[in-house]
Image 1 (cartoon, rainbow over the protein chains, first blue to last red):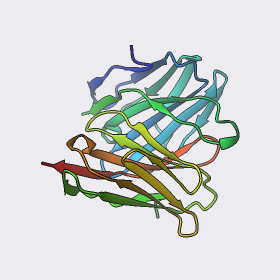
Image 2 (cartoon, helix red, strand yellow):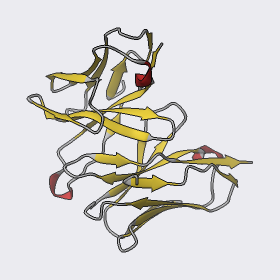
Image 3 (cartoon, rainbow over the protein chains, first blue to last red):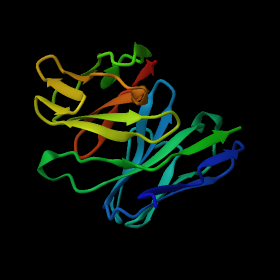
Image 4 (cartoon, chains in turn orange, brown):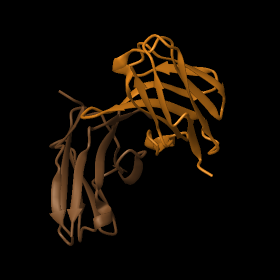
Length: 116
Length: 109
């Protein structure tokens, strides 16, 4: 079974609809992240959470919200979807970085979201 | 200017060729760097970490030049299975990663 799973894998929705993307992990990591990927722009950080009580905005948080329901679950919501939120969304996890400061992030398989 | 910049490619090379990608970064405070590999429509996966001057793993060699603020990835004896997009990644502080847009590699027979 995959260590990091995302649901749904594909979603088509209409402008103005509320949508939730879910992420679950079995790696036991405290840190979880949501990214979006657009052609030519690379991955951009939306929100991140270092433990259940910690939520932080990333580079492009406007129009998104998150919920960390448990150590293993981190969901991303679009309250009122708009077409420029059409993208590939990835969830990722990592363990405590320690002295190195940055540790490996493990990505889920992605959710392809289309907003019409 | 993007914090991490890469040539988007594509790099089209024959099997067996040696190919090198460069990546430049703007944050001189970045301490660690990574190369991730991403296959089409799949998730990124860690290829190599670059914590000091460089790292080698089989056919892959990554080097870091702090004075010039660039990271390179060298692939020797290219295989068809090496065809993918290679993402250069730097740390943005406190376990946050900054991704380049990626360099596409296509290895042909």
